[in-house]
Each structure stands twice: as C-alpha cells, then as structure tokens.
Length: 127
Image (tube, rainbow, N blue to C red; front, side):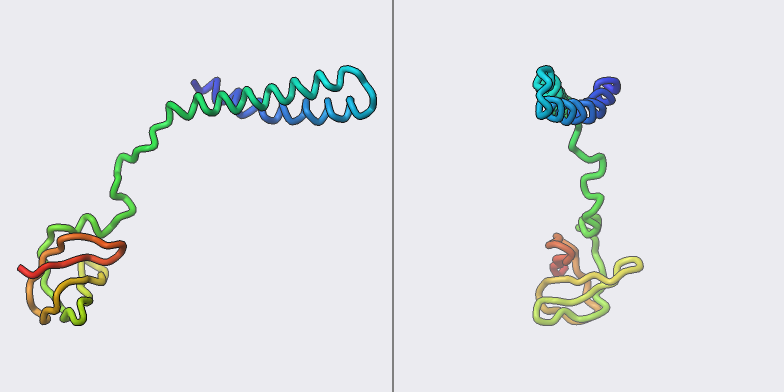
C-alpha cells in the first residue's frame, strides 16, 4: 500500500515532464513528440485513478468525535448560577472559563442543569 502511495506521488511529476517534453518536441516537428505527450497524459490519468482507489481505504471517522465541541462534555452537569439569566441569556463559570448560557430568566444562586449546546452557547434548564 505504501509503495503504491509513493508511486502515486511520483507519477504526476513524471507525467507533467513527459507532457512538456512531448509538446515541445511536437511543436518542433519531431514525430515522436506526440507519443511522449500522450504517455505523460496517461501517467497523469493513471495517478488520478490510483488516488481514487487509495481513497477507498482512508477512514474519515475520528477517534474523538467531540474533540472540537468543548461544550458537549458539560451536558448533564448541574451548576450554580453566579450571575442571573435575564432576557434568556446569562453567563456561568465552568472550571477556568466563562460560558454564555441560554434559558429561562432566573436569579443568581439557583441551580441549573446543562441540557444542550447551540454552537458555543450552553442551553440550561432549571432544576
């Protein structure tokens, strides 16, 4: 598999060189220039087909699907409001950072449960 991938990296370079050489030779009137041109084009097409074939073996899944979704790890947590929620928005402190929250209007000092995430905003519900 690695050998095929290595060949796939060399083929386009060789193909482009053959295409350039063939085009230059053909423009000078040399009869075998077209052969070099089509050989280079064939190598480029072969590389494209190899890349498609190798792409079938690539796993696009992640071992950690929530890696860039930091708020998801807080869902289900119960926290104490340090600041009130007014007009449906507020802020809470989790560990060493402040998070914007959405939920019903509540006074500071009440406990809430984090029930979801909407972008970078945590959604809370009263207990």
